[in-house]
Length: 585
Image 1: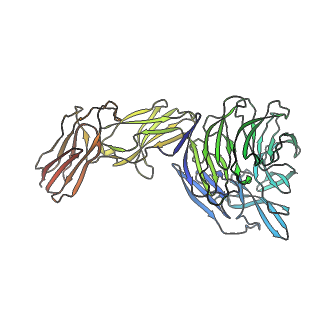
Image 2: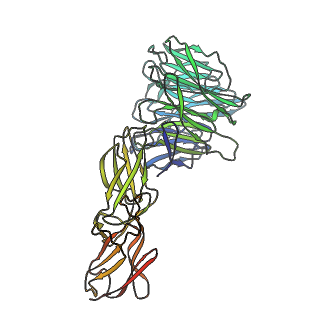
Image 3: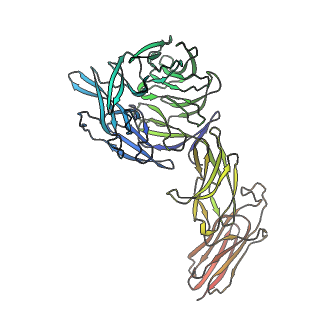
């Protein structure tokens, strides 16, 4: 079974890839498909430079872009330390924009916070060219997060927190964004929804407790609600689109109390449509310590059921919650962070995106210079995971599906090589099936080795495959009559042979086992059949692996062996037989 799956309450999740690179504390892993090659990309900042990793198929990812040298763009801004937070087409020109923030120290106590966008210069390049920026002056170098938002007028907006306040820009043209509002939101991260369903977009944020600000029109925002619970250290804010099915979106705030050594997760929802939000404690956990800027949670649908999950990200773990009723969220999966290093600084951020294009959103968990990619586990291949089979063998292929996600149909393939060339075994199996009895085909369509692949189709498609290579005997080995022999035998005909000849051998039933994994009532046993020259060197292997009881025949065509004397040796536990064969011309 590929990957590592962990199942809790109704959800199974596996790690499908681990990227040996990633952000440390600053920024996010932002994902996009810039249309160059229809392959999703991951973009992040790593220690004074940027990297882009691209999906290459079958959960393989490759580093395709990296910049590490300091340089100034033509607009005079050093973009090497630009920290990405979001990706999208800000100016609607069909090119990907990466929203970033950075700082610029000018000396004598003067610093600038810079909000900028990096854009693809054309449809064939990565988004690495500065296309717009805005400098905010202050007296110390601190860059808060930024995000993209949909404004009341349906234009794309940019929001960013800086020491001089929270700024909102509106896109007004190609690479043109106009500052529309500056205010005092006490926020570090944001959640964007129409929380009270009045047709006006709102911004949820928090630091010293949760706040909600509303777009009142005419480029004005005002605070419409503030929680009476005012703890410090609560900058992690995010939202979901109606997780509990009551028709109203939610937002969340996570904060920690050092005095109690605990972290808390609260959900907020406006159930009265008048900006009176109810607060529900979802969960709490022991806090191990860490920099509060080094974590970010998220919401999104990761199991393909059309309903968002709440993904709470802390320094030590990630927990996923689903709703089991109104305001009733329960943990369905968690993961213990294994990215920690010896630096003493722990960070972890979550991005939700379909980074492998299979129809399911993945969890991209990034921190301490690593990225782990997790995906809902739709199907697991149970058997076979290894072994050796011959032409005519019946191989029961078994699998298990998980719900969620939904499985509508399945297909089975044989992976032929490292390039993922697939040979179809069967397609269109019902999603309720759990076993398929495959008869190994003739040598003309059978490779020497391969891996069984099962593909499950539902809201998306996902696969699993056998853990190791399965071997298939060459040399035209075929299963003969279904009558099971009672003793070993080995024969060569004709002998001497001028051209083609046949090797027949019987594998007896030496112990009936009704629980045999082959489901044929017989015990497969190790069998080796080889052709050796007069010096004892193996010339050709006709069988080498576990073989079910039965009668078999290997046909060697004319010219398969040069003229001479050979010995055929049949080996099995507790048995050996040798036959002399003469080939003439």
